[in-house]
Structure formats: structure tokens, C-alpha cells
Length: 164
Image: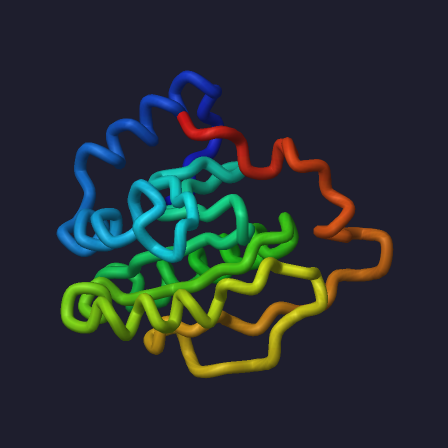
């Protein structure tokens, strides 16, 4: 979700509201990963990142997990998703996308795909893989030299602020 012009208090309130009105797939996924249930990793839900809100975020892996419903199949929304992914990648995050149907109908398969994403992001890029409907990690291009070095980022980076 993209929200322009929100101050920090408004953004915090938006995150709280989004947590209260999660989709069934988001609720189900949250039950799978909350309180370090998945591989001992910490996940946050409805995490602000710049002008966007990430569905789920794992700080240890710098991993953004986006769940997508039918609205994401529309061309206009697809363009917004592409912008969001590009922004998140430039901030040093990996982005994994799952459809709501995949999470609800094949949760173990989605967790297996999430396990494949466990390697922390190194800024070296990824090979091209299947389209987003498969839930696989999208290709990541190397950023220009000196523009981004994810291993040199401080642990308390302001790119992904602490939870609202």
C-alpha cells in the first residue's frame, strides 16, 4: 500500500488500522510466522517502508513478503506493485510475492518457497525466475557501484523504521 504525505502519527495509525482489517490470507500467514514460529525468524506485519506499507517484514533477512489478492491482477495495480518492488530493492530488501489463494490452499508450499529466500540479501542480485504468481523471488538488478551496499548499512537503518 502506498500513502503519500502522511506524517509519522498518521502512518502509525494507518498501520494499526491495516493490522485490524487483515484479509483471511494475511491472518492465516501471520499465524504461521508470528512469535518466531517460522524457522525462529521474527516477522512484523504492516511495516512502514518509506511511502509504502509492507504486508510482512523479516528484519533478520531484510525480506519483504507481499500477499496479493485479485486487485493485484489489474494493470494499474501491477504498475504500483512494480514501483514498490523497485523502491524496496533499492533499499536493500528482498521481495517475495504470494497470492492469497496460494497461502490459503498450499501453506506448506509457500513456506517452502519462503525457506528458499532465507539467505540474507547481499546486494549481488538474483537470477530471473518464475513470474510473481508462483510466489518466487523476483529478479533483482545490481545497483550502480557506490549507490548501495547492503552489507555496509547500519543495523538501525532508517530505511525500514521500527514497527508502528
